Length: 393
Image (cartoon, rainbow, N blue to C red; front, side):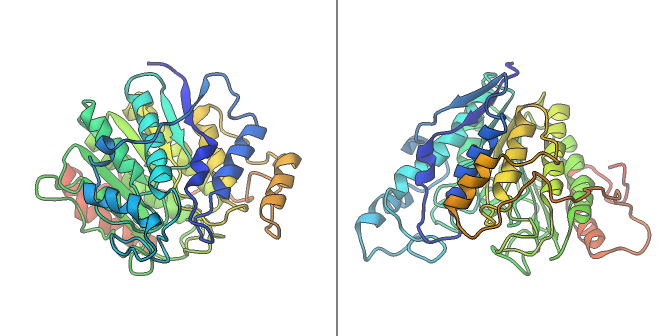
């Protein structure tokens, strides 16, 4: 297996653009610019790969052919309605099929490179459209690129794929696609569905009758900070991954859990997100011989958060993590200010937060985070042969 890291990138990925909409491709543009100026994309062993659009044979591994037809037709029909298209969340836009298929193709290219041994890790920061359903657009997502990539891995012979979603929103689309497939473990940490879209992702969602224990959900209360988030992550994710023994790890790394994100209510810092990426890399190294495919996802603090978070992700995937005290380059700051005037452009790669946390213990007076952890462990750990009350599991 090559020790290289593949970064799948083409400016054409910025065409996934819904116009005046929270999902603004400038966040991806600024991520790639920041990573480039900090030298991340020029590191030894980093290969930039241009994607090809996913064809219908790939897309229909997940999506209904009638839905693909609708995505193609909708931009040409001003009266089109249906399939979740034409809503405020998912407005119709020119080139919708082509740009969505390119995002999916980029994540498939990342997955193929890792599975075939051409790279140890691969990243598509433009991907992570995890809400799209087989026959319905949802949550800013048209085609579900992580699900399409996982389906491709299964077709290539993979038997155990773990998907970990650290977006603030539940990874509902990927969970739905593989709900009854014992070859795919889906794990999602997110803000409670009682407070946030899509309203799913409760602890008792544990998989279909043929795949019990392969859906793991950790819904967290609003206001959770780095310490609570990392406590929950480490109380659940390593244990379920070790029990499942994946051959490859796919992660959706939405940055919308940050305290500055306008669409959610968690209070993470860029430093806590960086710590999460380091933990994911360590698990891939421990369990999958390093095989890790990472995507972007949500994140609507377009200048203030997302470019720094995903540049940290790219650095973790390509080698040494960036020192949080690193200054953002003046050229990048000028670009960010020009692209989105009026936004606060960060000066450093840190929020000056300490991402320390106390490991979970089943004793003492439980906090709201501890109760959330306990609910998930109680619901799913026995299905995986784990003891929900033993912190060693």
